[in-house]
Length: 583
Image 1 (cartoon, rainbow, N blue to C red):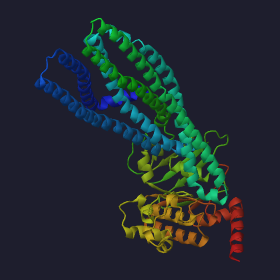
Image 2 (image 1 turned 30 degrees about the horizontal axis):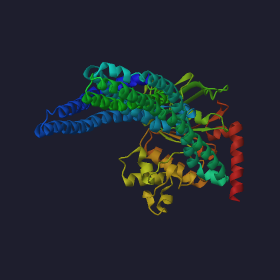
Image 3 (image 1 turned 90 degrees about the vertical axis):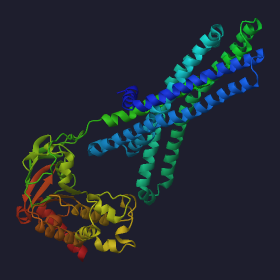
Image 4 (image 1 turned 90 degrees about the horizontal axis):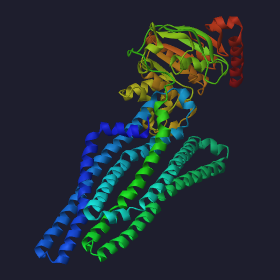
């Protein structure tokens, strides 16, 4: 879809506002072109002595009335038109947000956060201006131009009109040349702003790392370079936009000179009255706005085209995981993974190969293995962040793809190794999964996650603001707040993706004990615990050991120790490490 198709579709949806604005603009244009004609008649009447004081005051009253009417009509059409165009900006931002919210992680691995933010700000603004300012200037300028030219040709003198229009082809050629450069310059300006935006976002997110490594000056130099490039690109676009003004000015100056020359000749030979020449000069002055409007419209449209060329691919990009399921009831029952294989795009080695597991209600499954063995990929498979290339995954007798994503994820509480906390209070972050939860329920969840004591030590307790991404909390505290958030809802499946990596073994033990007690109270709930620390899966009903995407060992803790394989070796090593730390 082109920008023009987008604007046409939007205008059809809001045709009432655009038609009402158009009618008011038409009335303004008609009265605007009538005023010079009326002024010329008044001058000729005064020269001929046809007006007494009363008649002159009456004529001036008409001019004043039309001026007031033009003022109020301009306010009216601006209100109608800009109200509609702001809706387009809102719709685009809403569509972008909704699209981003359902995209999978593979999409965000290929996109930069700063660029996506720029799409929702500068690019959406540029398209909004094309729907508002450009539509206004285009309609108003075109109508005024047509009416003024008509009055000059038919209402004054066609010979003088043709002479005055001789410089206009030059202006049209200049506009075509300038417009070609504006689109390229606008695209470059938007791209460079996106890079600058991304640099700011990354720098602020990693400011502590930059300080720790002493890279402040280097980061400042990079920012200065990107800011300079963005400013230069924006200035280049503005220069090309400013080139419209000299083209208009030269053309109108030449037209004015021709008007005075030819008009003076006609007046000298009695073929035109002074009033008519005055009216024509006023009409020529009224062409200033349509000419500038043409340049403005072309500039706004080219900026809109460049912005839409960046925004449309994101809005139209296919979802990495399609949401075409029909079941809107959260799944329950047995969760079965049958001989699943999967490879990430661009990777030659599969991340998962022939994975099979069975999770019955109330069971706890442990998944362990060395780094890069595919543990987190199994979690992403259950969350439907990735799709199996071979094999299938079913829950409650239905394939995961049969469920709507919203219904599927309502049945899962997921805690990642690096949880995300919002710039809100601790209580708000915990209650995010259940906004209707009471403070008592929030505190109970915090106790189960063994973070209540830490929270109580903060000056404002549960009302303490955690800062952006939870910057005021330690890694272990963030993980436990995220666990509390997960425990606040009664979903049938809990996924802990190495979510205890930043807590000490004693705290880990307390949390696992609380989880075991919770599952005893709710035997229908299951849990999948991914961990590099084997003590986290000690009490699991079944443990999978992954390596290079394959299951190399499986069984409970005791059975795996008897196998004397990777699990047993790693267990002995971690036990030795723990005893040395205790000593």
